[in-house]
Length: 396
Image (cartoon, rainbow, N blue to C red; front, side):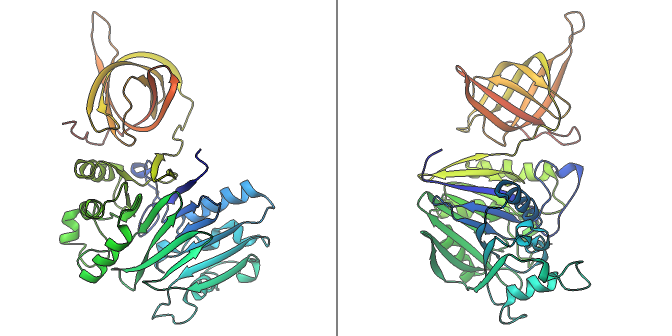
């Protein structure tokens, strides 16, 4: 890894309420939480939804008794952005120290974030109280338009258009710029300009895309969210290098999010759909994305001839003959001469009959992993099979 590298990890990407549904397992159901590690090692946490629990477990297991220090930025006080706080294991360890940042709510007054934390642990809402959280905690109230420096990372804040207020954040590191702008509805000129200022030239823009364009214009108008189409317009206008669709609706299953991603990539090729466990490494303003390990069971060796149709990382369509090398009920692994785009979908036509009784099986796979350089002139590609109840997206 490049020594001047920032690392971003998504622990929760769902909006409004956590979900647990068979049709949503690929993108995940935890509510918003990300962590960003700056090139100098400074840790930032972006929002405290239910994904915070998973992050806390990893940190606690990885660090043991070594102290953890982090700066925690909360965009706003709606439940889906704070509900992971009581379940963050590092808060229960005295050697750790955290500084929180958010705005003063007109509904809560001074020390708004401290009040939010204490209220979550108050009786009768939680079985233990604040005295059992011995970690160090400091609180800083910030507002839209602020600019400050944390160990060499420049932080910029702007107000976004969301009920009861919301802050967007821009983090400028020596490795590149990451913008976190969730929970914003376009249409208010002042707030739209705030968002453009945040997004300008960003290497990675994480933007709210909870609604469809049709919902945003009708039934969801005034809810404080955006769409994939508005996200694409923003990315193009502001010279963004990579766009991440974020804050998926709790009723949007994997098929729906696949559709948003497919449509967005027709307008802005470097678009990604956030998933629980997804990560990105940013160095010299170049971002490399990877998805969480998705093998849910041991794959069995197979040797099936297949015709594969897909999309390359450069956006070109390809078709080639290949061999499906490993397989289970959820996914498979095959070698290709083309390098497919991560999160693109491929049709895998497997010849499974006999010369006397020819037959084939067409599988739709979503690309979740690419091994480059494992074998000369070949790319090892891991796919997760799309549920058979899902409608295939067009290849043309």
